[in-house]
Length: 268
Ligand SMILES: Nc1ncnc2c1ncn2[C@@H]1O[C@H](COP(=O)(O)OP(=O)(O)OP(=O)(O)O)[C@@H](O)[C@H]1O
Ligand SMILES: [Mg+2]
Image (cartoon, rainbow, N blue to C red; front, side):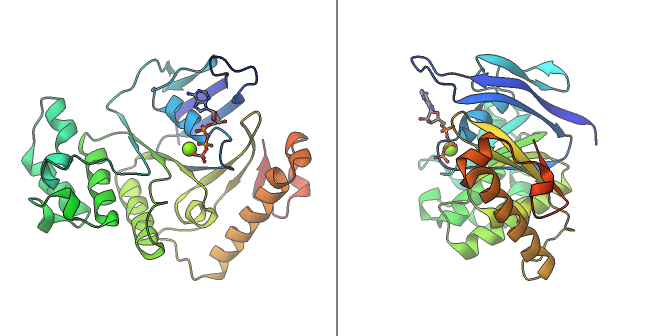
């Protein structure tokens, strides 16, 4: 797996604030790798994701994509948010084709294929407001995929959905990302979501926001939540998270791997 994204000692202090929000984030993400970023509210996950999207520049360090310093957003990496933010005055198909239209590359065939991919072919002409929350998030996913991005950045994209819709969309996004060899970085609060979708989970602690550990999820795809292996990995991640982040003193001293409960944990 070749390196795709390199977060090179990124620190960030917002204007008017004394304490840094992010400190010394140093991470490499491989091409086609699916990474989940977990951490408590306010630890800086969205700030870091915005930096990966080129929407915000860090005050120290930089983000490199294939070795090139990122200075602005690109159509090669698309972000998907908690709310789908679709335009209610446009049809579902026009919402999906928006990025293509902006790029002057209207492509009704591609839009139809994407709607098929997310299981919404019969809703092409519908108004987005007539769709359920899960269907709207599928439209947003199709729109994110339309410009054939190399990387998808997801900021808690399923958190507003009910449990059933959430798990089926997690599986669907995972399948599509793997089929299309997309690199994916996903922010989540949900331990199960991280285990269901990621190859590797980065654990963030707060004040300052920093990566205190990581865990590789060693399960085949498609992942079956009902297996003992899945439960075991979920429990390991939960325990590891609590060890590294739950007790702030442990988080600051960066707990060593041998203090964790599983071999596949690596402290940062
Ligand atoms: N534009 C800004 N100016 C000043 N402080 C900011 C700004 N944006 C975010 N922050 C602060 O930076 C910290 C991290 O915010 P961020 O949104 O990245 O957290 P998060 O981990 O995504 O939280 P959540 O899980 O609640 O979404 C917070 O303390 C927040 O108040
Ligand atoms: Mg956030």
